[in-house]
Length: 284
Ligand SMILES: NC(=O)c1ccc[n+]([C@@H]2O[C@H](COP(=O)([O-])OP(=O)(O)OC[C@H]3O[C@@H](n4cnc5c(N)ncnc54)[C@H](OP(=O)(O)O)[C@@H]3O)[C@@H](O)[C@H]2O)c1
Image (cartoon, rainbow, N blue to C red; front, side, top):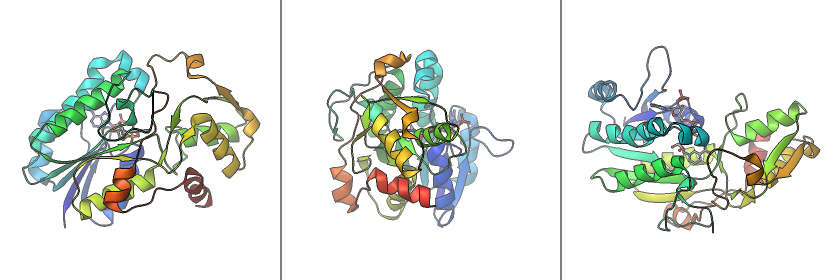
């Protein structure tokens, strides 16, 4: 049985990925914070001893410092996790193992949208800068690698307000008004679909960089309206606002939707419409 190490296993992606891959592989899924088995990717010595004992065939790096505003305020920590953490992993991996790393649409400036894998990168916040540096580090290394670059992630786990869907559903259920930007446009990703793409990369060899998103391109505001429709919640609680109204610490790219033609043709997959993915979550 092939061995898979998953870092950041308690995050939005790491949680679902660990459950799914456990069915098929020998998985070591390590969260950052736990009472017993855990992994801080900035701690080289800790990582070295884990690799000595487990020696994975695949490393899936789901660990990241993802709070975009906190990255702006804590630049050193952001770079330590998002860049040096990856560097540590690469140093510990054996030559025959493969790194699967997760990038982000935030490597683009968001002026045009519909970005292809080789389009110019120009991150406008520190989070995006660290993620781009990590992508470049991996591409310049001798490692066997796959970089998947998704858009906004959402999952069926609505217990924590750690992604857009759970925040909207839980707020509307509580009858709380929410302000949602209508000028940030993306093709959001249902995390289960991303998990299946990652799974297929463990079964069929493909390398390089791949964009992954949903079929449709949608503003955060329209996404929230769609959520309220599918989950039968009150859309009148959703107010449209502009990104500039939020006065956030870090700048946000406006049109960061990704062109996914490469993954559609190379993997022979279909992208799903967001409405269909939301229906699947609602019905489950
Ligand atoms: N969420 C999105 O909308 C989105 C969009 C595009 C790309 N991505 C990318 O997708 C990947 C997965 O993101 P996600 O949404 O699952 O993020 P997430 O929910 O924030 O999970 C990230 C995980 O990394 C862990 N972590 C942080 N510092 C660490 C360290 N030093 N060592 C080990 N683990 C550490 C966190 O643990 P603690 O919680 O214990 O700190 C957390 O469990 C990331 O690379 C992210 O950049 C995400």
